Image (tube, rainbow, N blue to C red; front, side, top):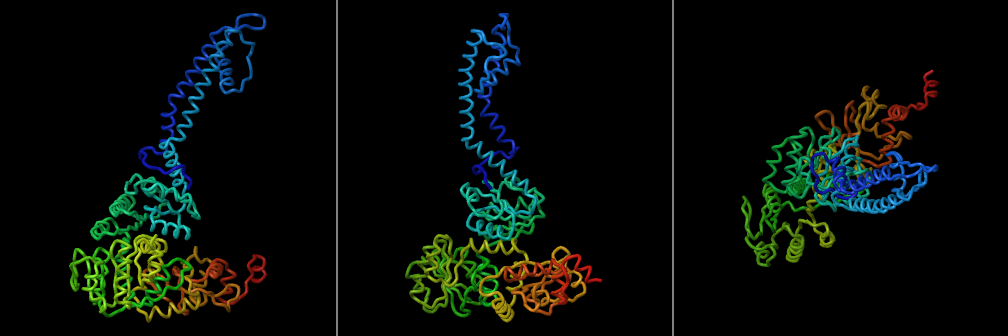
Length: 576
């Protein structure tokens, strides 16, 4: 993406011709002056008499006059043709030369002013953007909003070979696309994504558009994006971010969008961590960035009273989730609060009196849930000074305050933008991974612990690569005959095509078979045609597995142990 400047507002009608109309309008007067000067000069040369070498009267015809003015006005200067000029002709040429200098200076100045005109540069940028989108011949996603969460999503999707088109209101964010080290070209449009015309410019009507991700900071804009997509392209998947409960039902009214609500997500993860901490550790690790270390298991107290400071949207969701799981909760908020099973202390959460009233000495956990990072940090310090053994939870809003949260060693931190990014990546970046997480969160630690131990033993404590394998004619052409004969198991598939005595450093996390799934299949699981496998492993063994899937000789060796030549001559001799 290398547009001359961010595009602000250009009429939605005929955007590709806007630059031409601007040129015609801005250059109208200079062109009229140049054309008029040429016409008058040519007319004068045809009227003013000259003479031949023999002394006879001679006048230029219009073509000769135009030819002379062309090379004279462009400073080429071939000379006086076809005969030396008379004094009258030279006098006229002197006048036209000076007039042409003035006219060309005026025209060149107008061109330079046009090139500096903001509207013209914006029109060129829009024209370039639309041309880039029209030329995209592979599936792409429209990302609306290039803020903190949007940038994380864009980089992760780009790293997994997803093509993107970005729309954002802020011109500085679109300009940042030029400096971002994306692997593929990412066109960017500075505009209001809630405007259907802007979405169409971004490629919503393109047959290659594969989905829309609404991550703007305005929940009503996200609703408008979801509505426009549902009405104009109802078959496209939509991921919509929202922080307002009252908008969720309105968003669901338009098709079946994937709604990302960080406060609900955090509460759900907290409940899973309470019920199955090992399984939660496993899913958190597998949905983190590649190469991330295995997270420390949260030792969340399952019994005892929690204190939640701040009863806003996050505090309300957190308190409700805890109460539903039978955990008593004390809420501190200046506006009070209502809810079944809650003890409410009305007052400023930062005041010592309110903290004393919450009886932190007899609490097991403290959550700083206000909208301000500094307030949350001070609350954590005040609470832990009263009871150092508290399990602490804090809401983190601004990424620039990250070092402060890290320095306090808070047990669990909610950063909405990061949680939104990870959720979007899990849902739309890799649907198989999202299906695995959904099913894993319903399991207990008796299921999660063996799988986690196996992953760590095979792949180490850094998050491995995760990819999908399709056992179809396209995804595994070399294995089709063996799979149809029902003689391929998970253990046989994960063999080194160079040395079948060595197991690949990879683990099959899940098999999707039609509408059913097999979670953490064992090595004896027989594979079937059409299965989709979610695999985690080392990068080099991913390439070895690809060799088995695509090279017939490698597949034959892995499954049967027979050495088969890869060349046509060798295979022919072996058959004979």
